[in-house]
Length: 293
Length: 322
Image (cartoon, rainbow over all chains, first blue to last red; front, top):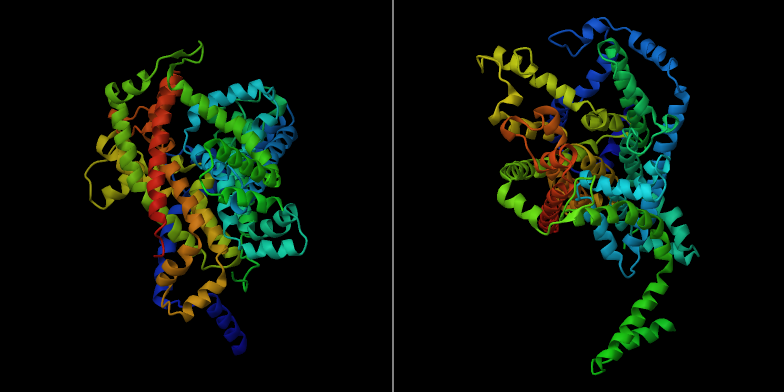
């Protein structure tokens, strides 16, 4: 028993050199106090979802529920069953739009980030600076020219109108490039000596080493794609995502306040599940330890 | 073989005539482009889409900023008129610009530090607990109901949580209409923004901390790094400079483009324009009045402001760990 404790302790000691007890305590207290404020929105969503109607409209409003019920969810499912288009269709649309947007962007941005970080070729700096600067231009005014271009490309009213622009968002490329820059060149050199070509190096060496980066990028992109109702580009009801359908349900006023609370819960919970899946995999992946340039 | 020839050419003394030099330079460039075929192939999918969906729209917007464009009729070229109007006649823009600058100067650096601080603390935890803690601090960014929470806190009558607390403590005698009183609007918006600040930068710092080579810490301990603060400054921060740069750019784009919280909490237009920012002003012209030319001019000015700030910040970050 004592040995085991010792082992655990030694393990910890190896991980963090130079940690004072006072420092630890200070930081944990700070975390606790701030944590209470930060978790407020999450607490509210969960509580509202199980509040009966009279508690939802109680004034002054309370954060915590007193008599939790699940009628909000059953109300929501009844409304969903009455929908003109089956809800499974909306779910499928969301899977295609969000899934396509996330996977395509992570792949496209990483593939472009690798040469920008590690190869020297004419135009490299100009292209990279263009991407960084593009993030500073207000999205509000560019969306009208963007709408015109999407119409001209004849991808209006298709999934592509939402997916393709998402593949070329600036943030992903910038994020991936910054992480790839840190990978020591010796790693690439040795892979090349083993006969790997650039595509293999990208897939087998670079990508596994920047796993924290692309998991984080996937979280950002998922959030972006998920909240998109597609109302600008998608006209056909059969193409619209879940987000849109759920928002339509909540537009029903007082009588639907319960269902609306359930909708808020569902809309928030899916990115949260995705977040936890990705975030718990953001762990030390650097295979280069022991390798020094 | 080819490579050595090209290198020889560029090293030749500059006595050659201009025309010849130009030819050899072109040959080098062409050769280098040919040699990098693979690189271009890799960046092609992204940059083709980027051209269509970002470069072209931005270029068109800049062109629109020199026109009078109401979305229905063909734009009329008006030269610099939008810009002169913006700086010489538009009093509200001046208020908005002032608010945005105050806002950015305060929230930018503070948010950035908070992101770094909390990412660094969370990095001390392991496994599922870590993911859970990250979720708690990232909750305001992922839940999407931040305004609801703050509207509840800031309700102007005595039932608002903040008013209730202050009345109970005897700090105020009567309820304050937080979002309808000019002097409170901007400070409250700054506080809400700080609360919302653990977003993109925060998560990328968490990921960045994971890629720092663990051997560096042991080496530093041997070299005489005494406590975690020294470790942070001399080891961790220099090792994650690329992430720090990324975080700074994200912070700049967020701090200068603030609009949503102002519109949702203070309304647009807010009382006496106390919560007006450059982007709320832009939205007013772009989405309410459909004066796209003028809105594009505002966007261009904001863009230049951010680019300038970015230059400055990147220079400062270059000094980390020195």
